[in-house]
Length: 258
Image 1 (cartoon, rainbow, N blue to C red):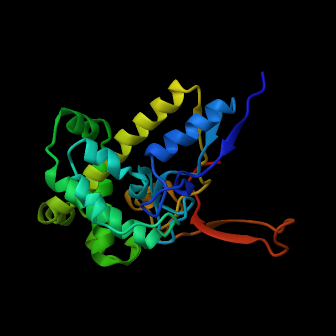
Image 2 (tube, rainbow, N blue to C red; image 1 turned 135 degrees about the horizontal axis):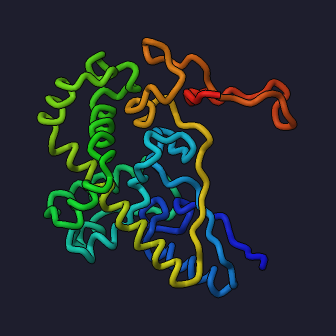
């Protein structure tokens, strides 16, 4: 039996917080899909974006985009106060710069009131990558450079310096873990709500990962890099209908054996 659906990025949903989220606007759209007897909602990658906010150029494929977190749920959970939302200026048009400033400020407020519980600890235990990722993002925000331009002790992941950095920046790292915990929790609940309406969530993933990403930094042997951890070969596509000269995508190739 044939089934149909709609492609709509979560970020494109109407919202007064400068970007769409997993909130009521997403559930309202799911209700409309249900009424139209649609079976699928296809979204773009939800991973942690780069500075250009491209879902296909992520800083980490496993980590979620903090801008998609629904702030109003955090009020219901007691992590934010209602006045925290009403005291801010809003805009319904997507403006990534304003969305990032607004949500970063409020997520930090939510983190300040958060008390770790068993659910949070289970999330960390079942996602062993998250602490390493949080360290990567904290380093990224500290140096404001791609990881290959960091001091060698961090570029090459020397164990003792990394441990010292984690100890000296524990709160910043814990904040990043908290953000991923909230994102994951909201995504799971969002998917469950869709499934109850008979809607399946499907998506897309990029063929390659960005060079300046947690994935490459944490797993350099999985990519074709030289001794200086620079790409030996990068992705692209030959001449075709869209480009007579071909396209240079620039992501490092995987180090797979033929």
